[in-house]
Length: 514
Image 1 (cartoon, rainbow, N blue to C red):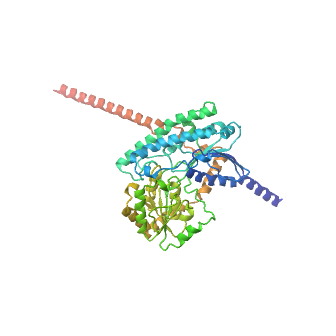
Image 2: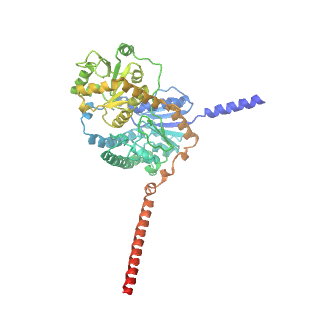
Image 3: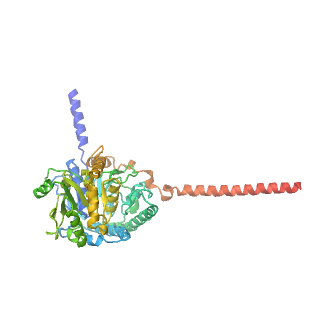
């Protein structure tokens, strides 16, 4: 009988641990780097036995009976996310920071239209299926609210960037502009007077643009659902959690409510795949190490300004190190012997090689976290979006330096590379890497735990603070301020009257004595 109870307990425990949830994942943004964050999470959820329905722009190529997907993107449009380095490198700061908001809004509406107009998506919306959890990216549209309204399931989000300005309002997360930089501006956590002033107006501008855009997003959802939906701002505040691709050791430390969980580096999954033989040979045979140069998947080699490319090549020729340059063209005029070009390279495997001494990057968050995870110093060439903020954060932590393209001369490039190739700089970067990797749980285990937690606790409303439902005047204590101001005015008025009557009394008193 004793063994029977033990067996029953083990069976019950196992059944609890392997309880499968029906999860709908909606990823409307087409950016390739965003898909690299979603794919490993979706695969892990499948491995845990959950049933997944995924809407995305790329196939995650998962062979599992519990997995089905709706792929939104046409094969012809896969390469549309390409930025011209020749264009972005010379734009004024104010133009980039202002246009980012417009770009985000327009891209978000286009992505939402493409999602909701998809025939398979429409079939799903009308299927009457039940879901335990809806998982979506919180980025530049609220298209997911169409699914939340239809299926009435808890909503968990993920941000492939650091926290966006409108995420704070959604979760009533503290956002003090005196030391928390807007992730689309170019500031660190230690701002000057004018930077703090710009940060305040930057937050107001980005939040205003997002709120204005919600009206268009609501109309778009209602058009495809064929019915009215509640106020979109109120619906967004009903979100359960947000997984953020950041970590306090990399991004600047800041307060977070319980519903915002940091999982920075979640995409870093080492496999048994090896480096291509030609790349491995090039790295291993370099006596002084290798510098890896990549501007990401959205910036192609042929858009690199010719005069700036020559400055880089002249600087590379002076170095004893070899250079691996991700370059999409077949040839590179003027290439010195210590530079190897190739259209595609396995970035994580290269950065994790012990003979790779430095990384030249545009400052995308995925490449940045990979470099810090591997302890490789970075020379950033930031262009747009959150790249400037990422670069400033790493620079402040001693893991890299910043080079603006307009300043890129042979001597400047050479000096900055000399700085990050210094052994002392490498040591600081490795200490930085240790702080980044020192966690109680891996980013993936953290994410899976909290997604299951939300499904397990029916949306986990207890994670939301009371501030989420507060009107603005209460949150900022404006009513208290008005009340205290009125009290002060009344007290001043009473004091003035008392003073008047006391003075009058003594005046009359002395008048009578005369």
